[in-house]
Length: 341
Length: 222
Ligand SMILES: Nc1ncnc2c1ncn2[C@@H]1O[C@H](COP(=O)(O)OP(=O)(O)OP(=O)(O)O)[C@@H](O)[C@H]1O
Ligand SMILES: [Mg+2]
Image (cartoon, rainbow over all chains, first blue to last red; front, side, top):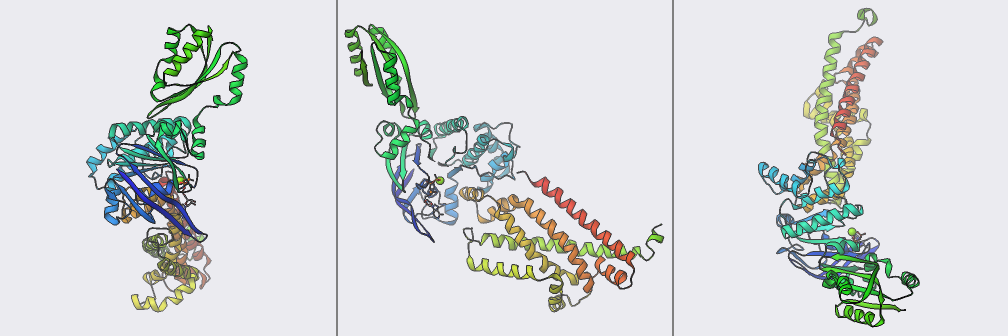
């Protein structure tokens, strides 16, 4: 669906040249939710803006939905843009138009006749859950509602690709979640390809299938979200992953747990993918003579499975304990015995 | 009662002069609006980083605008006498004032249009582009509607300036309340005539201001 080949973007300014995007190669498949994460200035916006021709690459080619966006101009670029929609951090709605009129705008641009336009707008308002706010002006809406208008507007002409430039960065955590849910819903229902850029790892975790990590204009790490969470390779990726992993894993907590439970065994379990969804604890209690006490832990969902860690305390006969631990190990769960009392 | 207080006022002449002032103001406001809007749009669109970025065109329009904006109006009228004669074949009457009024006010308004357009969020223009909008669509469906309150309040200020310009033009020979106040009031020392003409001009200004303000606040949905 999207093919980015040897793309470079160099800005020349009075202070010199800035290589904003440096030799990036990416293939994004149809129906995928693809995330790009990086710190400020990494070149994320520049990259995504080359996908709809708002920026032209200095070198390389960008093909989106069979259009060579990096080459086409004028009418054919405008036509292509109707299939490559975009939503923005600051929503970019026209304040002089109502919700309905804002959503109708791309339809006016595409030359859809009035009757059809109104019908389509009503569909979109229902799709994004803005019933009853049709005649409000943007200034009368909350941030989340404004982004819903932005999404409805972006979907109006049935695009093949949706580009999201920090679409949730101006929203509070709850509103962010509801917008992310809406994006997943749209992706599933309409089979839309979504490219999303962000500096927040939990956004990637919640909705992306694959992620590219950008630093200094380059893609330094790329892979399915779960793999990247499991085995982050680059230093910068590890830092991003830490944003969403729990503080329970710190040394102090472990020491604290050992003090609290002088008898038995404290075990740290690492779950990834399928394993996280098995009834491990139930099996443990049913089949072994041990008491199980869940101390703390957290399981997080990603689009390709769950991952997380769990601290449990096991107590019982020595023999039963070792059998129980052997069982856990056989379950494709990472086990680390922290103490043997 | 009025006769004793204002013995020299010829109401028929006063009404005629008011009509002439209104006529000069109305025509010049309409033409100034169109011309200023075009110039302002050109100034904005040819500026750096914009759709029609063109340093030369921008510089030329900008200089012309600045020059005409800086010439005091009374001097502009005199300077424009040959030009007016050429196109209208007369120096007397309401129409004779129009070229000077428009050339004096349009550059003034063009700058206000430019400022209004610059206040539009760049992101909104970019959003329209990302939807595949043509430049004409961006002008008529984004730039003008999104800056409309500024365009209206700008034309209000310009219209008020034009009322006072008409009065100055009257002194040179165009008709209107300025002409009446000068010839009948000042030169013949009939201060009641000057007084009434001034009051009428003030009323016109207040009405323009009131209409402009209410339209502006009605349009502004921000
Ligand atoms: N129009 C421009 N002219 C010159 N330099 C630019 C321009 N746009 C971006 N840059 C530079 O390119 C680099 C990448 O910018 P970009 O906006 O793509 O970063 P980003 O990853 O989106 O950052 P943020 O998270 O802050 O939005 C920066 O160093 C920036 O200064
Ligand atoms: Mg950015």
